[in-house]
Length: 291
Image (tube, rainbow, N blue to C red; front, side, top):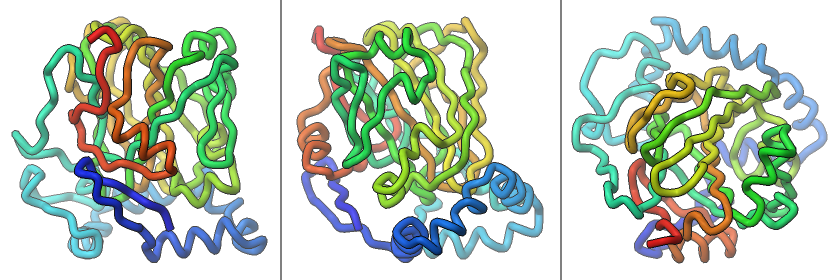
């Protein structure tokens, strides 16, 4: 069970059948034994092959009904497989990208939590401590974000699984850090340092309005694919699609340097109270500290 707020301040309690199953897997010794198989990249690749097959199409109507997905938000087409549906595209106009230069926007539909990175380049998610160095495996790069913020955008299975660049600028190449594939559901973070164990990719954006932004995509259980499409050194624009995940929940983490971005107060207060905030792709979540 965890708490989620919308931007109007209404707080709801989420406790799905999936949450209860994950509590069993992560909260009991026998369940954690089964996890060693479930989090393996091999099983995720096998699941990906099945969900890419034409025979998986029969899952689409059930998935839409069980998760209450509004299909009117998406481009209409005949889906070849379940993953073809899962990586569906939004219909024109379904999301508005906030274009005000000082607005710092969400890269995806998700539940957002914001954490202050201390002067030692460390931050804590619930009871689990992380260092930026452990996530990036680069001490020099980690030092650039000391005193800034870590923005953790957690995608659920029903969310739109494509993500964007949050500002214009020049992007570096992608660095891949191999690992396992825990769920990114909050229950897992109570037992494992999931973000430094899971397979992940990151790149830097020398942005037009917010200094250097690090963007990291984190894979999760049954997500064997993180598909980034930009080319090192190319000029990108705010709202440009950066990539997408295959099936499952997953996470995008942004890191901003000290004095670059001020988070919106409602999201920061919610995060301090352990409450995630629902946000949409392109929605403002902060402002330039110079604004």
